[in-house]
Image (tube, rainbow, N blue to C red; front, side, top):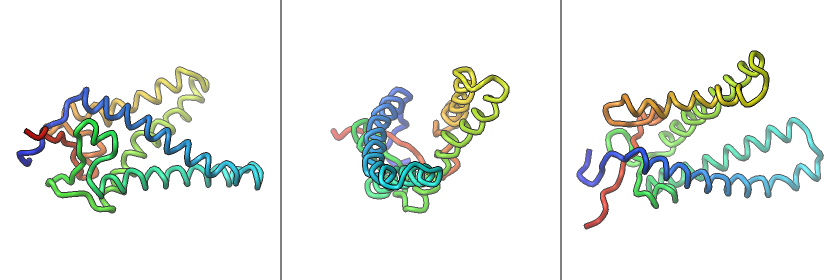
Length: 169
């Protein structure tokens, strides 16, 4: 690894993640504000619901993909001096960014959603099923505890690396 990069600590990653959640919420609210008049005009339907979900996923990929391929940093990552690079220290291209986005989407949304749907039948569609489904987040995040380079599972699978940038002296 380069002399300008360090391993990011857990607290730095968590702080960046919480800040990122605020930014993503704003992006999703904006996306909904653009899409809502279309739903009001055409009427509510399952097809429009699917269209809205796809629109939001595409917009989020645009936000993350642009930031990761341009500078390797989202706004939250810049604040906390984190950077996303390829496994060998190279900047990300759109293909690698899309791969990371899709893997993270499966691990953090797809698997918990499938678990919730399955557990809701057994436990009832309440807080217990939701809590049990969200416990799946421990797997990709907890992977960093065992990984020799302290990388999350989605970074390891996508061939990316989250690093901390040394402060300028």
